[in-house]
Amino acid sequence: MIGLIGGSGLYELPGIRTVEEIEAETPFGSPSDRLKVAELEGKRIAFLPRHSYKHNIPPHRVNYRANIRALKDLGVKRIITVNAVGGINEDYSPGDIVVPDQIIDLSRSRVSTFFDGDDVVHVDFTEPFCPEMRKLFTREELTERYGLHTAGTYVCTEGPRLETKAEIQFIKSIGGDMVGMTGMPEAVLAREAEICYLMIAVITNPAAGITGKRLTTTEVLQTMRRSTDRVKQLIMDVLKSLPEHRDCPCKDALKEARL
Image (cartoon, rainbow, N blue to C red; front, top):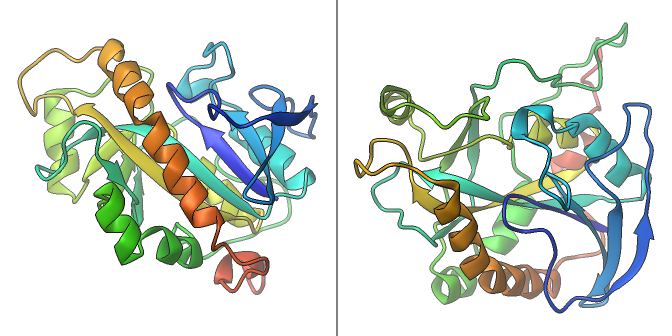
């Protein structure tokens, strides 16, 4: 089963019929909302809105552990996330789609591991996104069809406020190409759960200070709505060629990770 986590402005996949709705509960509490299970290209997809269907959960209050655990308990082996991000890289324009290859975590107050007891585990996070899935999503024909940016560094900030101009300048200086508030600890929790994880980042606006204009949530939501059909079609195109069995390090992330 494939897990799909939708971010700001993406609360469903239009045109895809839900066959089951699940109210999940985990040892870490409840996930953001009920999971909707659908069938797409012959594969079952479990959809979860990160901020709930009402969008009443801010980034710093998302129960990331419950979300990932609920998907794992459902049998999800791969997770695709859709994230609204602010663009820092000058090559990015609003509406562009990026498939990031790296993450920098600048969040502060979030529980970032399943292993916060006596079980000491250090997972390898050199490549935070599944290499097998990245290879499928960044094929030449898809890159040309959707105008994809096939690499980039996603920087996660705490939120819920937007960043200052100085913070964006700092993030740019350390190699950040885009900024968001939800990529971490989501990505590392998926790795600890031995679930493949890939991010589709939609550039919804230039980050603070890039253009000198005031940032608004309206432009974020409007750009995400305009991009929904392209994102959906991209995911559908990849699902057609997604192999049943995984051939990547993600599935063995805990091997030799415990002390």
